[in-house]
Image (tube, rainbow over all chains, first blue to last red; front, side, top):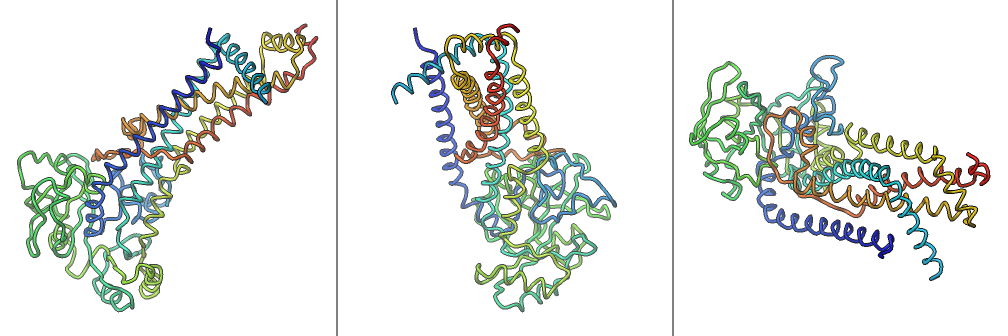
Length: 92
Length: 393
């Protein structure tokens, strides 16, 4: 009968191999992404873009690089930040 | 040495058999632990993907962006500011830009409208169809994929936006950005600067901000300082600052989401500590029998260590793999609603998952090590009890 430690080692090796393939897959995806990079570089350079289009709900999450730190609290004096994506984004 | 490894293997066998004897409890611990690690690892992988996306995509951002601030808010700036910046030694070019947001009241979407002076000097590579306008052409727009959907253009190639005075400004679609550029252009409407001024009701001698190119990139900070000194009512944002902002915004320590996940992990570790310190009479009896059979306290501790190590290592590997699948294949579907919030325009960008050894080590240190500490330390206290007392209980 197979020893429990051998079974454990087999399962662990399988999981680590799967983890390795995750890393390999990530590398391949990065290679694919490299093909479009010159186009994105040209867009950023010629249009003067400063931000990624990720969350479009508030100007300070659409353009965090060009919004100042007070932008989330500017609605009225002592305003609180209330957009859900603020949970995810740290202040600058 | 061989004897030592054989002993450890025997202890591991015993620990695994012991885990299997209480499989109901241990499988539930494994599932919860894997879930906690999955959430934490997903968050870390997503943060890293976004950090790398920002780093690689925004390499060519404007060297210096100058905004005018009035009462703590950004205001339009006079073009005379551009003349004053041109006088600074080391400045190659100053380009005025008009940009802002158009709120589509029908769909509730915020559209970014950007207007540039002159021809964008780009080929057709970034476009799925059409072309950029030529110098002097007006009333033509290049729009992102999200704008096409939001305006429900279908086969139409004209659209209108309301000006502030509720009159309509019409545009012909000159081109549509390719889906591969969604991470930059999904909500973008690109116009000539005259059209932008017309749409936003901005005077001809005003711009939203100024883009400054410097001759020597090593002098960005020096030129930025000179601009700040010459124009004290401006906010000067440099390329390194933009990149620094994104690295900070997407740091794994960022946001309330990270706090929630670390809190969940802490709660799990506290629970593990609580369970381990309150051993059942059955477990105490097992330890006592082992000690009567000649086991020493370190042997008992080593069994407890192997139990915790096996369980947490499997949970770590399973959680990390699931997290990769979540981010790499399902585009972090669980976190996207939080990340996008109430955004109406939701870019369908493809995240490139990034797995770094440092991140895996961080997850390991945040999950496996505290779990081991939380289970082995209380076990040491139980293993040190008098054998006859435990047998009596």
